[in-house]
Length: 93
Picture 1 (cartoon, helix red, strand yellow):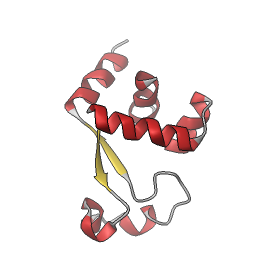
Picture 2: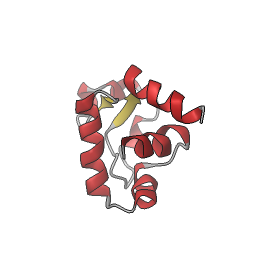
Picture 3: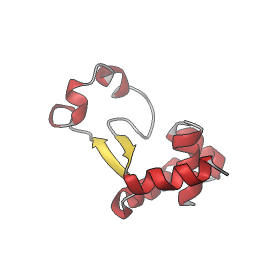
């Protein structure tokens, strides 16, 4: 499931909602899985719900990002080196 999530989010650039649809799970379950992937070291959270205290504070897209009706509102994730290695293997297949 980790490879599928990384593939949809970082290779195909789908939204979290579209990724959940592709995986056949609800968005709450995907959110749990993404949180687990942060804990496991595949992803790193860049922004959180507190815009003023997060990296989002200086981002020019912050105001639009935090108004979207999506499960990712207020959260931005980036690949860690570990996650990048998995994506590189997926992209070369």
